[in-house]
Image 1 (cartoon, helix red, strand yellow):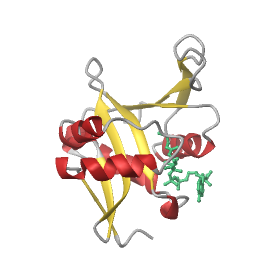
Image 2 (cartoon, helix red, strand yellow; image 1 turned 30 degrees about the vertical axis):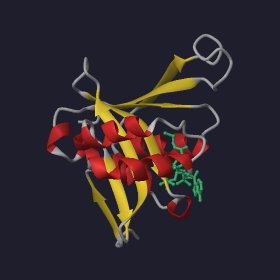
Image 3 (cartoon, protein in one colour; image 1 turned 45 degrees about the vertical axis):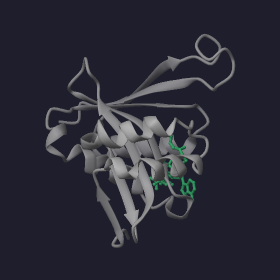
Length: 162
Ligand SMILES: CC(C)(COP(=O)(O)OP(=O)(O)OC[C@H]1O[C@@H](n2cnc3c(N)ncnc32)[C@H](O)[C@@H]1OP(=O)(O)O)[C@@H](O)C(=O)NCCC(=O)NCCS
């Protein structure tokens, strides 16, 4: 299914392409291109780029929580519209987990808005594939933290998966 898709660590040269990919993947928040350059450099060993014929078609930014070295935090997932629904996102998360940088990782965390059903499905499927539990709680509340300007973000936690 993904025979023509290359998964690899991002490099700083991918930063601008990540900026434009995220722009065409609502409801993701657009970060500054500077932030995308940091994701592609400082966080490259825990992030992944998907390329099709040299074009960036998928990106996951993630990092290991500074105070919890057993937890990979998935920041954003962006899959080009043309490739959705084929299991790319869970496959890309597992690609990161297989790296030596993640050898101590036993938990995966992310945040999801209540209405992003596709994103919920990605993490439900991931929990099932890793034969792990999925728990969720409120992380950022619409009124308390976003002044009513952004949907609440649920903190989703999967694991321990090994
Ligand atoms: C959410 C997202 C990352 C999922 O990536 P993906 O590679 O399509 O993930 P999957 O193939 O595992 O599909 C996940 C679910 O998306 C839904 N889906 C299927 N086809 C779809 C399509 N063409 N378009 C949108 N969603 C679709 C299904 O509910 C699917 O679950 P299922 O496998 O149980 O049917 C992708 O839709 C995306 O980039 N969305 C925009 C940005 C976003 O919301 N990011 C996540 C927040 S961090």
